[in-house]
Length: 183
Image 1 (tube, helix red, strand yellow):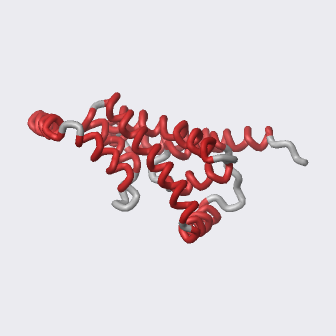
Image 2: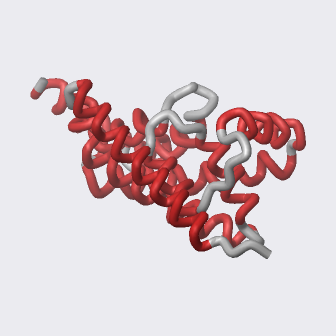
Image 3: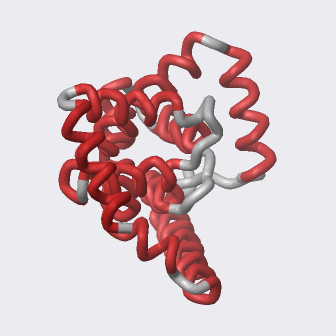
């Protein structure tokens, strides 16, 4: 294992400034390669360490939010497919920004679907990017920092963690409904 770590360090050092650029590009290519966000962020922690890996993941995920916005607005068929997926997954459910941010932390939740929710909630592109960038901080930090821990957890601890996230999601939904005033 020590030799593997040294090989990775040597590769990163020899790649120089190109390594972070390639890593950010990996975030942009991730959906086409069918890689979950968690896998790429874990790789960032392994390759670059916590601080640099989390920052690079934040930049990569923020750029992916920008790309999502462009895809949805330039390709109506893509938007229609996401809307159908939204109707299937979250049938007759309105999500708050807080709930979308919790869902961003959950592994394997469709990134572009959550971006669509944020687009529909936002009045401007600037507001969308603000919410998007705010929403990718926690996944970038958590998956980079605790990637190994999450991957190494026993199955029952993973289920407990998932149940806690679902509980927080439901609680935020109830709080959101209690704050919404009928017309």
